[in-house]
Image 1 (tube, rainbow, N blue to C red):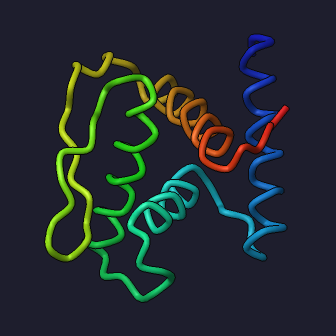
Image 2 (image 1 turned 90 degrees about the vertical axis):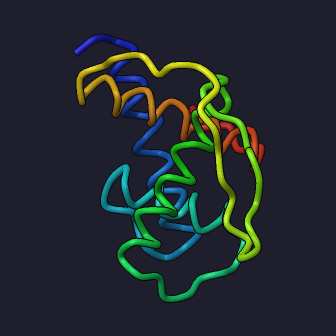
Length: 120
């Protein structure tokens, strides 16, 4: 593992611990964190979501975090309050491991920008 990968994993572990302190439960993985971001971005509070809605929430989160690098921008919010995003530049073709790294980096940036939390 490269040094920057180790740093990323250290920062990620700190984020997970911080989320555990905040919500009382440590997210199991990246998908769990994306779900939390999606719920937060939807802004309708914690409620029961269908399987399809959970997938949509994770999509909202992915679009939101990738918007920081200009890949997506908010297109509109529908009548039910769900945000819809549009792709503004083509995503790089990464293998699954590199996709996960990119998302983790962007998720960390999300918490730093949206909540002014420094995760070092």
